[in-house]
Length: 317
Image (cartoon, rainbow, N blue to C red):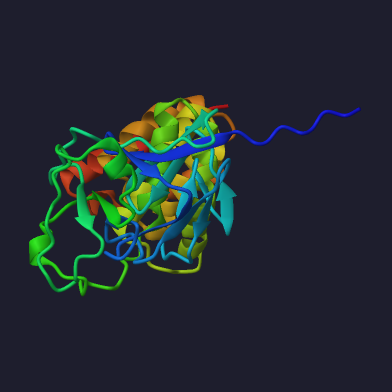
């Protein structure tokens, strides 16, 4: 006789942002810049309706709602929908939210409240969702609210991110979402991976976009100096950590195409990395060095000194 299959254990889901926890009831929670969203993210890189979290008894799903700048889950862009687990990191715009999923044996358990918490502009604000858009929105001090009262408040939204006074804004705030250079979003993910020593993960996050920038440069698309600098800095950090010659070649080619001398940061890192990374494209480096030699007399002293450092480089073997 087979035993009956046990029912999935209930999980209580929440999001942690800026040190505070937002509990998610069973149902649908919309994240976005619009004040009508369940979780309002005050960030111009976030679409008005950016993403949705669907919470069930024992599972939760994250759905991208066709956002301009995408939704990232654990350093990977979400295509369609993805299941959420305890400890997952969600990135929307420049904001990072940590998922908590606590197993509960009590199927009738209610969500805890946040008694005693006061919110200020540096952390977050809670707005009454049923407040008319044209009227003054009041910040709600939570110190006097009990746990169950807060848990049952279905018409509140937590506003996170860069907070400005809501009294000076209306729901007719700018509707256009700023299209981010992907390095703004991807760079945050890569930086976190690098801090944790996960350079392979950082490379996975960055490689497609960095390669697309190089392809654009090869096609005579003008790459802004700041964007090229950021891309090359990431490439050199990867080259230094992983000893992959392709990233050194990347930096050389980007500057060769642009006809530019490297910045002080890139020059210093090139001097450290080039001798110890085997397999660098010596011919391409030679062409770049020849280009620099031809322009030395026209360069100001500080730039000429950097060019001379690059000219003296010998690739590792």
